[in-house]
Image (tube, rainbow, N blue to C red; front, side):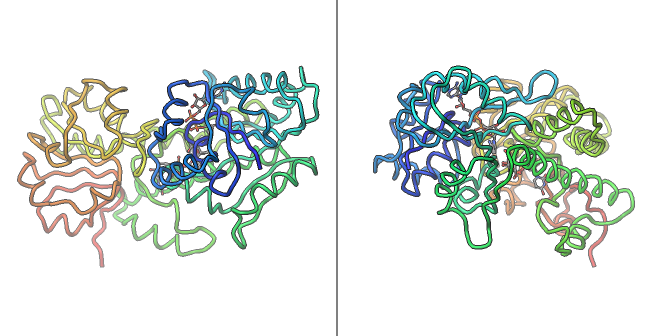
Length: 437
Ligand SMILES: NC(=O)C1=CN([C@@H]2O[C@H](COP(=O)(O)OP(=O)(O)OC[C@H]3O[C@@H](n4cnc5c(N)ncnc54)[C@H](O)[C@@H]3O)[C@@H](O)[C@H]2O)C=CC1
Ligand SMILES: O=C(O)[C@H]1O[C@H](OP(=O)(O)OP(=O)(O)OC[C@H]2O[C@@H](n3ccc(=O)[nH]c3=O)[C@H](O)[C@@H]2O)[C@H](O)[C@@H](O)[C@@H]1O
């Protein structure tokens, strides 16, 4: 099938590459000339494990094309995916201007039947707005489908190629047939394509992200309670996760959820609710808990350094909002940096992939270490903000000898508490105070 993906950011590039991988002819359109040039020349513009190999193969075999020209990009396409940004506006609602602008342009240039697919995360009612924006100037038949994306950064290729489910929202039989054909290769046995109306599909996406964010904030509060009552959140996590109705995944406490989606999508759903005259109480609490959780380690650090943080120097491992990505949007590490600097401390940082983006945002507010161990030089303590694998089994001797104090503040529960005690570290993590049996 010939398809076009408009917006070649994270989702657009993964979508385009994966559709090419199953034999479709894909044209990706982006207004960013620099990005299009790089991609056309074989340079992958995002860090995503496993993507490069697929990208190179499909580019070489001629199934992937890139252009800045929308009219040229959609000429022969049967399906056009809109993978455009929907950032939060000033009031927290999703800003639809990118999506509606392209929809309006499409109406002017389409000359034959096409299926226009909202792949971006968009509020309920957007399919209607996209349809209206296209229809203003359109002389041909078309359908609009809501097909939200559930991939996670860091495992995006796997998530796309083997999705738990594909949600397709449409009232059109013709569009349903086209979408079913396109997605047939991806749906594993038992992992269905779920057809529904557009509004339900749109809400499914927000409900999924908000539910996952709720799980995380819930566990972060349980972790706080564990510390207050002398329980261990690892044991509680295993204890409840073994119940199939709860499930083992997304129960890891830490220093809050970040990234480009949970924060913005929870906020957008709260705003949609408010617009519908409904106060979504749980989600307001989820956001509130998450805001506080980003600085969960700070009181622990302050209580360790009784003479204050002014003049102290900290090593910070992990900047990306989670491992296996260079994405630093809403990364808890950035909040920790700001808080430490505001207290008069200095910070040296290391991340396997996210140094360049942090340099752009944070500049010389921190120093950038070449290596995770040189990051420790002259530091009073180590703080861990992202659970990269490379941090999981470090050389504890080296850490002990380099740090001025044997103190580690771990926001991702990487190490066993008992082991750290045996090694003589002052070790603080999230919700793990009880002694193990
Ligand atoms: N990043 C993620 O992991 C996921 C994101 N989503 C959703 O997908 C949507 C896109 O997200 P990302 O890919 O992260 O965004 P992004 O910001 O990485 O990429 C958006 C791309 O659209 C391009 N663009 C902007 N205006 C354009 C126009 N008029 N014509 C052509 N291209 C244009 C930009 O240059 C950029 O390359 C959002 O709604 C997001 O919530 C959904 C699931 C996962
Ligand atoms: O809409 C989106 O963009 C995507 O948002 C999330 O994916 P992503 O943001 O890539 O990352 P996650 O793996 O979900 O992690 C989000 C945040 O939650 C945190 N987290 C995750 C799991 C957990 O148990 N505890 C926890 O604190 C992570 O550290 C991270 O900061 C969803 O998992 C995807 O299904 C969705 O498509």
